Length: 411
Image (cartoon, rainbow, N blue to C red):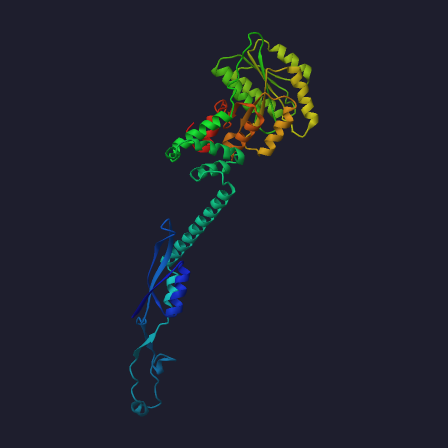
């Protein structure tokens, strides 16, 4: 028997070699997948090895050929007379002969589970190889686009860019690390700690809402676009002040456009034991604030406004002028695009913005947008929210929280 071994990058290619060199009657005896080092031993590539042979005895089976007399009736043919029957030679007994059974070993092997597994392994190997080549190509392209970033720190730069941190900001953050010794930059925890410190310095935090005056309530208004979660955020702040800090809190809503918003806030007010008033005009708002003069804090929930709706923004400004709040917090969704966030800050800034609250941090795909915006608008961060639970999913805005999400460090 003639045996040969064939090697190829894929199972299909190896089988093609077997068929070309040994013909369709070749018998597959063994297959296996091996690895070969390449590129100075830094990368591995898999290949398939098939052992095949020709010259095997063909599988046979016994076939009974019926006697001529059996072809019609299955019994010997009887003559017309006894003499003629006697003179007729006795039929030969049935014989067993051998007949070749056609087979195609290559095709039969391709239909076996082992062949399917080998083929899937070959395909997986090719996919991994292609993915590695693409990753190297992308990394090299990015590396060429940012020659000012040191090689040892390029992975940190790439991580920041993937989180949509602005390119100039990410470059500056990484270049500041060059002041440290090379052996320090090889320590992952050290580099992450230094980047965390940078993020914390970039995000000014105003801390939690505090009452600094001795007479009269501390009035806080929440404004922002539609759908950012102002009402839920206001309920979280109110619950923390009323229940955890034992402060007297009054709630006012001017979001009379949505009945559901009033009902939602009324339920929260009942749960925490705070008074609630709904107002329609600026004069009603002044009267509601005077009626709650015995409260330590008054939180005002406003209706969502589109940044492009100048008429509604002017109406909002009229309400704020009437209330004369001590603080105005612009509520923004961290899940929105940077363009939408910057547009909202620009338009609501014409009304009044003292501090910023970022909601839905748990839904943000790329938290680098928050860092870009805070750095650009020069406004302090008061709170961030991380879910819908009241009052748990809210915390004072700190750079450490954002750094944790950007860099994967502990809070």
